[in-house]
Length: 186
Image 1 (tube, rainbow, N blue to C red):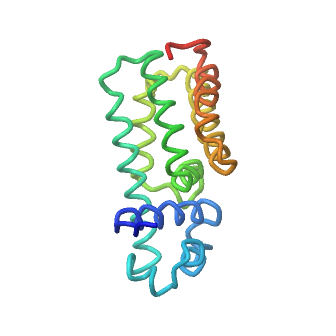
Image 2 (tube, rainbow, N blue to C red):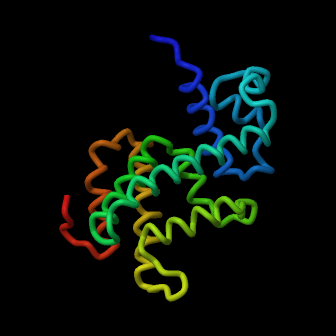
Image 3 (cartoon, one colour):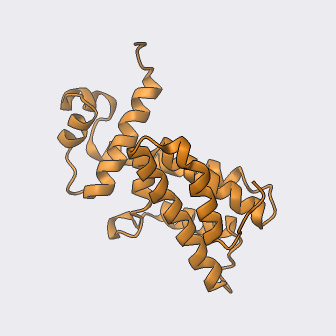
C-alpha cells in the first residue's frame, strides 16, 4: 500500500476531526478522541496541528475554502434549474467526499458555530440559490434548506453504507424534487 502524502494525511485528519466536532462540539471534543479516531498518538496529532484550537481553525478554513469554491463554480449559471442542479450535485459530492465536514456544516445552528465566516457563507448560499434577503420567497427558502440538508444527510448516510455511487443520482433527484424541479435537466 503506497504511503499517504502530507495533504492526504491532513485531509483525513481534518475530515475526521470535523465529524467529531460536529458530534460533540468544540468544548467536549478532546485531542485524544481525534487522535484515536485517526489512529495517531496525541503527540503525532500535535505534530500536524499544535493545538485543538489550531485544528478546529484548520477545519473551519477547509470548510470555508470548499464552500467558496463550490459557490464560485456555479456563479456563471443564471438562477434556475441548472444552477440548482449544479449546487445540489456539489453538495452531494462534497458530503460524499468530506462526510465529517458535511456533518459539521449541518451543525451550523449551534451557538458555538456562529462564526462570522459562517454568516457570510450563509449569505452567499442564499445568493447562489437566488434568494433575495430583502424580500425572501419563504417557500423557496424552505425548499432550498430542505433540499440541501436532506441531500447532505442522505449522502453521508450513503457513505456509511458504502453506497455513495449507487445513491448519488437518487439523492440529487430527491433534492431537485424538494426544490420543485421534477424530472430536471440531468
